[in-house]
Length: 280
Image 1 (tube, rainbow, N blue to C red):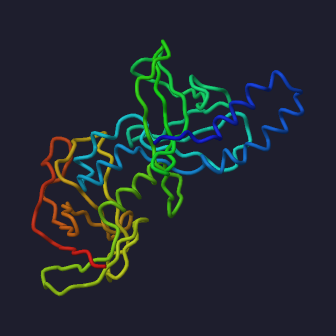
Image 2 (cartoon, rainbow, N blue to C red):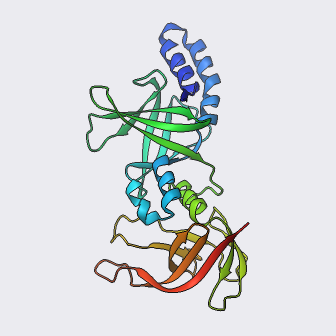
Image 3 (cartoon, rainbow, N blue to C red):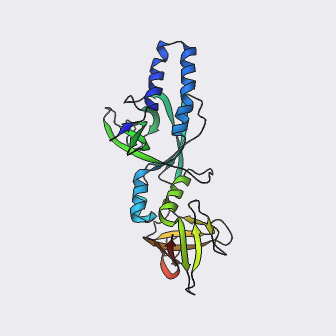
């Protein structure tokens, strides 16, 4: 059973009453409500369709078709204006910004935005929130010029472990959590197990050479590979890339064959290098 979160209704009620009350009194009421708005909205949100797909496929390549339009949203803390500046990731490839206004949308529970529908600029979006199975979701409501609801885009909140100036960070953490995060026995050519840990923030512990990892999720701007790729020791002089395959509680890292460059040889599986078996 869906229940709509009440802070949007409270905000819109205050906004609609501004013309009927003194400016000072309205301003006071608004300033009291804004901290509640910030505490609920602030943070990182990731597209639910993508999260569900990654959970099922365990493959960024197979789930890449879900990365269309707004895929992550970041709402900063301590919003103090009547307009909230929203950061977003468009197609998991480029940064994007839009605004949320303290003004009632098409439904009383929603707020207006200036988010653009580039396929049809007469369409528009409102923003709101719904509680589904006791969990809060951020919703973008998509309307046409006749105010007909076309679809709803649902986002789930993600607590990012380390915050950098990267709008794809929350999505990256979700991918890490669904595919790699956990403790493993790592087997190489010696077949001697080594206990290692992959954390959701991309940190690796327990291995003498492996310090961090990065799973590639952005496939725009070049040939789309047919295999999934991970970089160990990302952004260091000792970085090395592998293609990988995930099956339930087991991960397989393979040497790469090909270069994946435009006009070059597509990436593919080479020799199996490491097998990681998840342990409790």
